Image (cartoon, rainbow over all chains, first blue to last red; front, side, top):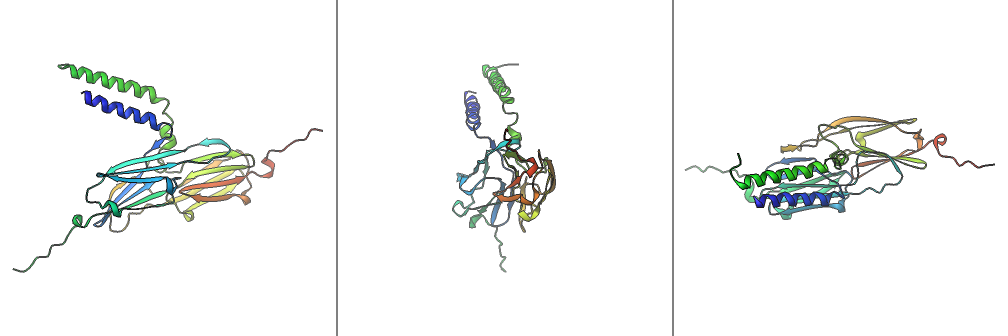
Length: 128
Length: 148
């Protein structure tokens, strides 16, 4: 039980830390075919240099920070500076070195290629 | 009911957590509103900001994944309409695991605080955000009055 409490406390600390810059969960689409997994995430307003994609021990974590340079008085405000954060568990069969990422029109597109060993194979039946 | 000390301990732990969550509830009330995803199944229209600086209004709208050809903007007097279409297509030959980014058509209209000069409106798209610069019309501009 002691252990559980520690976990709860760590979570608390993290929330306090990120409350300076609001964090948000980006909406994602995930597609898969025989060769790769595709991940599309909405991150409007995030510039290329402010995106980071990390793959570590089966966890893919995305992070993107957006900051607006605003001048003038705000009459209404529905969105603001934010940090998009989201993590996914990915299979070990993803080749981390070959992952490609592109950012276009506020959408981050990740290509996660599968390793050769993980691709489905057609087995040929030999005549005996 | 409570057979072990650890059960009681756990119960108080949960209460502490609840208390701190409740304490944060109000300060975080607008948080999800300001930072949540723009396009979800519940809200189909883009979020916008309106800023006013001297001679111009500036409208910002979150339009991730929408090309500029799929947006149309109409202005008349102090009426502004942003409409468009967001298409989210499954790439050929892929199966879908998760689909949170909804495609939709939307239209949102605003009444600006003052008339704008529709001829001189500038629109640009950058990183999935639409920026509109709307110069106020001559009659709506602030004027310096000299005292005789």
